[in-house]
Image (cartoon, rainbow, N blue to C red; front, side, top):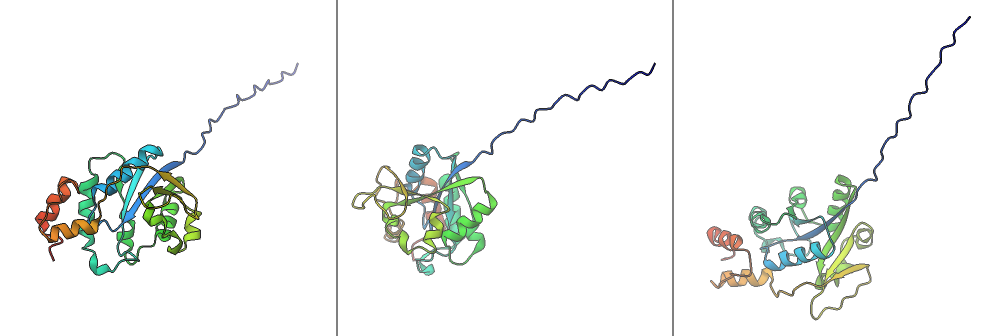
Length: 210
């Protein structure tokens, strides 16, 4: 009598699949000459209100809209940024534009970030005054397809734009880097306008006196 071999079917293995997780990341760019409390408050408020995972501070190498002679060395601007954001767990420094050199166009920066981190959704944080200038930006229509614009409301500037913008309310701090440089040049206090560590760095390095 022939015995037939009974084959036991292999148990089916269920492979757990998880949807790829996207990450919401804010961007604050600029010369940061120097970084001040207005930058930090704005970034912190947007991060909290929009529930962003983190904020990237991206200092430019050579801003396309400012005479580069008005900007101090990148190493000093970077050093002050490092000091300013050191104690915030959600703030990070990205030196992409410094490393690239030349004029810093936001479109080029976002394209590079998207290549490096395709699962990130980027939120470009701007003051309401800057929103008004978006139409003059390099490749603005292409940029609008790559990022979400976040406008921080300011008195005297309408919360409207021809581009899609998420508007956020934040405490208004009438602080500017230009004003801070002027105060330092005239030997006036910048206490409470910049982080204490940044104030100390400016004094120790003798910045903005010329």
